[in-house]
Image (cartoon, rainbow, N blue to C red; front, side):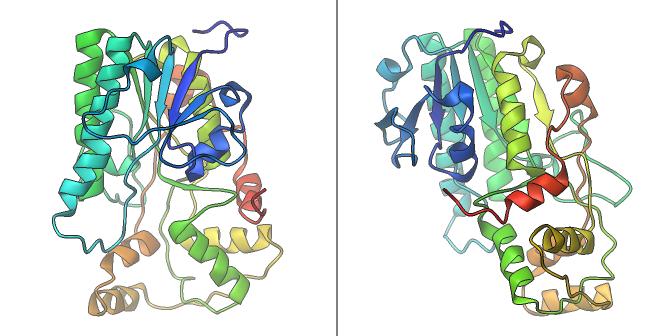
Length: 315
């Protein structure tokens, strides 16, 4: 798979999503077959498939070299659905394992699964960072379902001799970003003073272009076989630094002021927003030295470039 002139036959799930839409712009994915319920924009090679726990995908997977599995039920803050773990397991575990087993039976050589850094835990002290060798400690339905999928994938890989590659990204951002990061963009544009200057945390993020580059490397690199990789921009920032750099990248001025962090915590607790406080004030760093050494890889895009891309309009 390390032949530079070789372009593998790829099946991609989640092509209409944030990461998938960027991945399909890459040369290696121009001819990839995207499968799922929603057709990706600007990609013609698509087959409408409702991924379930037991659907038959053998015809689709015949003669395929690699499956890149992005489709998932995303993490939702304050999920009010009854028994959310059941919904997460269905989407992120059982559907994943059905796809992987059918891929293995069809002779697919490599299965790349995009997991989450949250399988290792929620936060660490600012001086520490998650490492690839750390024990898993998932703490919410989303990360639990992803962790269980990882375990099942490794079992399937051993049973059928299919190579499994797992990538665990932290918060992903870039052009077309959605969710909590898009809220930051709105706050920057509103020029509302924010009480975040006193926050002294450190957080790892990954620009979607850096994540795409790593996925492409994992398509063919022999050292990716049966490995689990952590990924980030390798440039950790505090919340106020992130906000200031994001504003600068968009040509705005950041208005932030000091406010006791303990009061932010008490206010978050009072209004049942402790998860929001955790994301805003706590540290969550990722050590990617193993990824860099194993694949001879480093993030090709700087944080400045990735933040600037957030302000670009979708094509």
